[in-house]
Image (tube, rainbow, N blue to C red; front, side):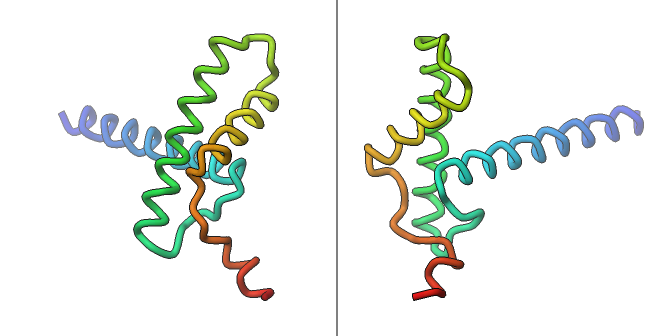
Length: 97
């Protein structure tokens, strides 16, 4: 019984780590920092990540001939076009001004 609980905990931990890594990659593709400064900007970034994932999935089924990078560039452009990216800039850019 203890072994089963331990295996379950490991599976949940691995799934959480993979999900967070995927979100970091998407945020990087969208030009967003890893963490936003305010809760509203964080919520907006989460929405942008969700729209990016949905758009990327739709493009993978409708435009199968596109490469993964082309699909992701298109999805990022669509998210930017919709105005879903938060206005906050990464800390490294805001300190230089």
